[in-house]
Length: 467
Ligand code: BES
Ligand code: ZN
Image (cartoon, rainbow, N blue to C red; front, side, top):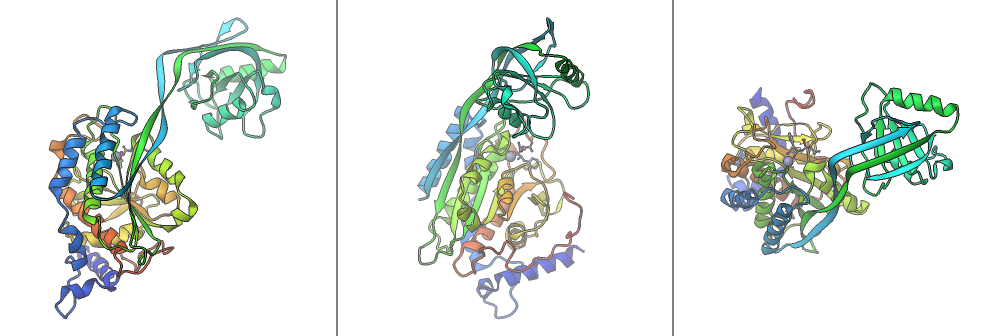
């Protein structure tokens, strides 16, 4: 079975290459689809796993948690290398907010009784004494003007906590009491930066009791929150651009990404200094190549906090710019010697958000067979990295990673000694060859194609998501 699909993919890859790659074989007969073309060689022969390893060694000396000096140290290193390779660079700052919870305590007194509320994560520390008003689910457009100067009693559900708080804050509420929509817990909820009113949560039973009491007449509450808040910090994306020659420009943009932040106290050698090292190495190798496509090499900050850097970057793109993006290659955890198990392709897999193949997986799967890995690369369905925001913009995107994960994932033991240069080399070759296949001037423009130039046939077409 393996052979059947291998052939199918390779034949299809041959079709993709038929715009120029095959003549490089020079044998006058059928080209060997399993071998690197002369075009591939222009890239892959220059890729050095030692360079990548050295980048990882430097970056993993210090944790790079978003918003810390460690991140800044990494950002400086990355930018200086992009510059050294001749790229136009941009360090793009964006705000992040970390929760302060120092013996956080909350008081909610109504009728001489303390309801012992939970302090919502990130709640402003402050105090208010005011009448309570029931505003239901606090959806936009339903909050009455009468909430001004009052404490809003809100039911959990339908929209986010932050949206609910914002809707009453915008109308002048001085405090928030949120009650649960099920169960017996009072520990839930979060507030956002700038929502400068105390916000506490209570159980469903407590909330329904207040709703009933309010039917009989006004209630005054005293809320007090201490030891809680949100601190603003700055995180960064690092962007390097290479524009094509203006006579050759197809208008296309290809993105090559990784995230440079690590978890707290994690040296993040594999997660994701490995991906950053490949972004840097591919930037070095591809600098000054003749291309018809703009290349953007980007390392994102705050991926570990919820893909914040990539969402920020995606949010800065104009729709015209996003429309010109034909592919996003995300490399995240591409070098662990302890990941991948005994799976084929050394455990390398490409994950898409919808579990469907796309331009990125088609090109890279075929490139896997022509380069150091020597095998097609399978695909599956998973988010959890910076390919997500690009997928949401309609850009073909995939995450390159080894599965199963190493046991050092998100631990202080994610260190340089666990890095395998072969895995780095294999992945960088695959991504490099795929990017060059789009960007080299002799292949046709892909704008708006949203699919591979020719279909690639995988045997696992109908397998369950994530399998
Ligand atoms: N490198 C991981 C992503 C990952 C982990 C992909 C395991 C596939 C399998 C990434 O840095 C990460 O840890 N992401 C977070 C999610 C994010 C939205 C905060 C995660 O998976 O917990
Ligand atoms: Zn990661």
